[in-house]
Amino acid sequence: MTPIYPPEPFRIKVVEPIRLIPPEERELKLIEAGYNLFLMKAEDMFIDLLTDSGTGAMSQEQWAAIMRGDESYAGARSFVRLEAAVQDVFGFKHFVPTHQGRAAENILAACRVKPGQWVPSNMHFDTTDANIRARGGRPANLVIDEAHDPENRHPFKGNMDLAKLRAFIEKYGREQIPFGMITVTNNAGGGQPVSMANIKAVADLYHEFDIPFFIDAARYAENCYFIKQREPGYESKSVKEIAHEMFSLADGMTMSAKKDAIVNIGGLLCVNDDALFQDIKNELILREGFPTYGGLAGRDLDAMAVGLYEGLDEAYLSYRLGQTAYLAARINEAGIQTIQPTGGHGVYVNAGALFPHIPNYEFPAQALAVELYREGAIRGVEIGSVMFACLDPETGLWHYPKLELLRLAIPRRTYTQSHLDYVADTLANIKDRAHSVSGYRFTYAPELLRHFTARFEPLALEVASA
Ligand SMILES: Cc1ncc(COP(=O)(O)O)c(C=O)c1O
Image 1: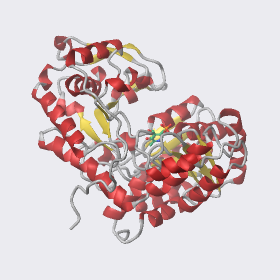
Image 2 (image 1 turned 180 degrees about the vertical axis):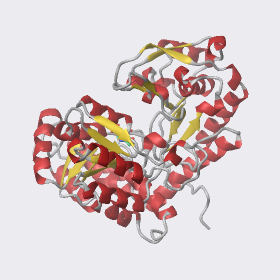
Image 3 (image 1 turned 90 degrees about the vertical axis):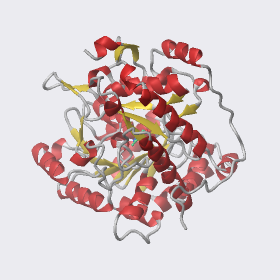
């Protein structure tokens, strides 16, 4: 019998203590940080679900690989080992390591995006969005409408809307679209997977117009496991075979290895095109480092080479997706809405539904992030109007995202089921006093990626509910 929530396929050999600081101290820490949890110290967190990026626990094999790291500047053995793994798992013609995902995005955007050009995707993650904008480009999100309905149980809510994509390409034309993307799984839309059928159709559409197709592969292994579980015809294929099929459809990929390669730092940029690869190497040398280390230490390359295989392990993937499903089920039992079906790497709590009295421009999901810390020293991240509201340069109007979400991202192989129970119980306590929670306003906000450094102050409840 396969358990609904498979237990950890590992046991614990090293422990890292965590402590719960008292409520009065938490209140002071919140004020000091301008109510921005990115500006708080990890030592003041009891359970840190800010991100699953780079926060996972490495295995004994990865730590052993770190000891084998070759720190030669050029042509290190570590690079050769990583090259073999990257070739085996992804199969692209060329690759460079980068220090993380956004570095790969920056290099790709620097090499190909010109001012005024568009880059469509199902949904760009914030760093991809910002890297395109930083080159004067314009990101476009063309995910299916079901993605915006938190109750809709479509099995592949990360899918691209093919009709919207065709209309978009026909409107702007090949010259205005240097490349197209798709993000697997769709982090900004709830960690929702994309089906193989959709990826194929997207690839065909881009290629029909001669537009290169890139996959943002941060969580490709989780996406492939969802395909195995949910898409007819893939039940008996291995996750690695599914990954091969997926990447054979693309012309390249960017990847933050801090997710499905289970490393604390690292990224990849892979391409098939020889001329583009030459440009990438030149840009990489300027920004990151020589192409055989790309801003990483040799030991990091070795940890990635091992992690790429561990991230594809099916016992691990079924435990991992089970852990996310368990946390969501416990939160739903408390009567709190989360995005359905539960995604791969985190639970996305519908803060807009929990705090209907807080309008989007007073940041309901930021308010929930603050309450979760206040109540239980738990850190989540706002994925709502703080992160994604933006001024449309053409109309001068503010665009707000359709959902106000608090993401509770689960670091890989790090927390136990009782930690997750504590998170669900803490949220249930907040629900009991939800009507007394107020919204926030910025006291400082930068132009791009404002969630990282913004500062806030709470609004009086009368103002928030006026
Ligand atoms: C889908 C996706 N793409 C890109 C990135 C950027 O990766 P990094 O944080 O390694 O720069 C992230 C990070 O969270 C992500 O989730």
